[in-house]
Each structure stands twice: as structure tokens, then as C-alpha cells.
Amino acid sequence: MSLFGHTRTIVSARHALIAPDGHVPSSFPGWKNATAYVLISPAMGADLSQIRVTFDVASGKAVFPSDEHEHVIYVEAGECEIELADESISLTDGGYIFIPWHTSFNITGNDETRVTLFRKIFEFQDGIEPPPLVFGTASGIPGEPFLGNPRALLQTLLPIDPRYDMAVNIFTYQPGATLPFVETHIMEHGLLMLSGQGVYRLEESYYPVTAGDVIWMAPYCPQWFVAMGDEPASYLYYKDVHRLP
Ligand code: UGY
Ligand code: MN
Image (tube, rainbow, N blue to C red; front, side):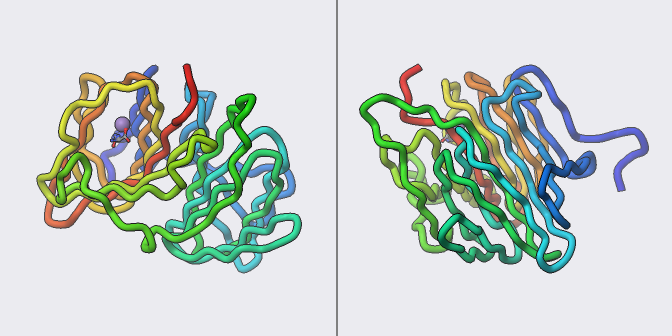
């Protein structure tokens, strides 16, 4: 139990750490037996939203209308159905799907289902076709050594294709492995710690982080990570890519 009146959560202008103890639910039009936790959003200065969705009972339903937003859904636990206009796709633990803009869909799940969803406005560019829907499972994607380090493996869930303006990756570090240098870059990140623990540097501060924590890094937020403890540390993260500033 956390100390009375204390939390690890911090929200600043250029980064945020959202610990699970402070989550407050939201619901939206058409949703039934489904709960959203909007952990990152434009309300804090971000260009993306990162939403955790849970379902109360069998046949809970989260509804997303068709508009200029595109989405990636990652299944943290349990299973769900992604209902599109003309097909339904089943995803289980570790499954993911990219849903293009101008596509309405529902997510249905039960009380064992937990998903994380990344949502952003698609950056259309003349001469580049919008990217197609794609889905798969993280276990089907090999981890590549990051900058040659076999103790820091990167899985790239979405195709590396300039039509996509976002990437969603999973980084897995053995204890003691680090990001090799303090990164400072134009891309923004939304991040979910999937397992393990470590220390995240965000701007000038160092934060102990653990499974279930969410981090927002604004563009140019200096960032670094070291995995600590007895098990590998793994995180899922979003990044905007492939568009000129
Ligand atoms: O893709 C990335 O920018 C990644 N190396 N950043 C991070 O893990 N904080
Ligand atoms: Mn980065």
C-alpha cells in the first residue's frame, strides 16, 4: 500500500509518469460494460492518446467512431474481438492490430481482458497512400539486438513502411542492460511497462519504474533506461515516424 497522500505519479510540461494507483475511469458514448483509463492525451500536451480499456463482464463493448484518428490496440491480458464493418478479428494476449483512419470499430472483451490503445490523428501526405490494416502477435516477431546489443532486444510490431506514420515496438532488456545513450529526438513516446523494473531518466530526473507504469515523453525529452532486478524488463511504446516536420 502506498504512503498516505503520496504517489510516484508526476506530470510535467515535457514528460509524465503515471503510476497505477492514481487511475480514474472514463466512459464514452455507446460504451457498455467497458471502462477507459485515458493515461496520456492532448489535454496534457501530447499529440497521441494512450488509453487502457478493461471490460466488466462477458460482452463488454468499447465503441470507436470513424474519423481522422488511427489506432493501434495491444492485448495486455485475456482476449478480445475487434469488430469492423465487414469482419471480426480475434486477438489474444500479445496480439495487436493497426486500424487505419476513417474506420469505425468496436472492441468486445470480458472481465479478464485488458488492452492498451494508442490513438492519433493520421498525418495524410499527398502522394502517399494511407496505410492498410494489419494485425499479428508479438510472439511472432523476432527481437533484434538494439544497436548490436543482444541483451536489449527490439520487436517492431508494425511494418517498416513510410505509409505508416507511427511505430509500436516492444523493448526487452536483460537486468543491467541499458539504452546505450541518452536519446534526445523529435519523436514523441507513449510507453507502458509490461514486465520487470528499472530506472527511467526523463529530462533531468531519474524514476524507479515497474510493470503497469505509463510514461509520456514529449518530443526532445532526453531519455534513458536501465533494467534492474532479477527479471528482464520489457516495455511497449509508441513513436511517431516517417513525416517531415
Ligand atoms: O525508438 C526509440 O526512440 C527508443 N529507443 N526510445 C526509448 O526506448 N525510449
Ligand atoms: Mn526514444
